[in-house]
Length: 133
Image (tube, rainbow, N blue to C red; front, side):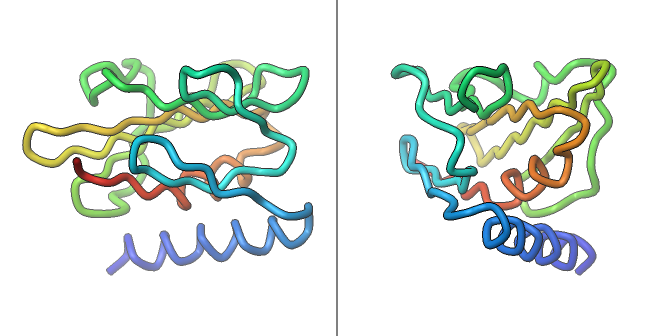
């Protein structure tokens, strides 16, 4: 119940932020979908979407599992079945990891943003829709 409320608040924030900052784009990667800001663009064929001239962005992590999450990461409240999320503060940046697991199949993402854009990262993380094979 609490996870549903948190997810609803994050999605609402994503929509509100998107309205405030222009048209967001939905990107698809191997059956997954996620909504990112219009200023982020595809960076090569490796499943990365980054902000122009910065190190902020989103990465799809094909072989990343919960075991790979840095030890100093703080787990966020349980947001859904088979889905776990973590936050790492590293100086002036925040890194978010999302790991979705089902039986023998795992999907993972990493989002990096400056400290001033934590709500943006949470909105992006909340829009992530991993899919099974």
